Image (cartoon, rainbow, N blue to C red; front, side, top):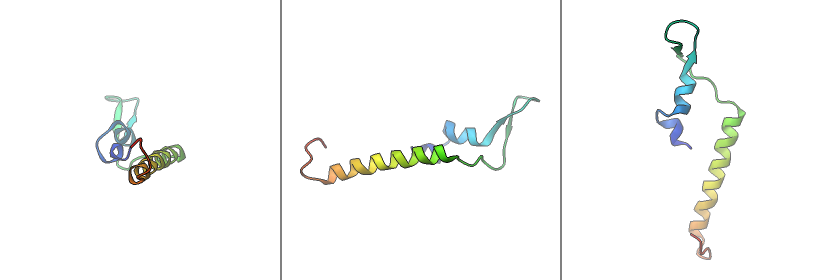
Length: 65
């Protein structure tokens, strides 16, 4: 999830492009769109899942590592 914001992914491109009625139909924004609450909630949930999986790997009693 985090690498989608560090590489030129669809998420990053969507923050810098906007649809226009003239010309080729797309324009480049200088400043990206600010992420909304849903974006940060999704990132938080994914981070918590990965953190939980890391704890499973550190726990010797977990057999499903």
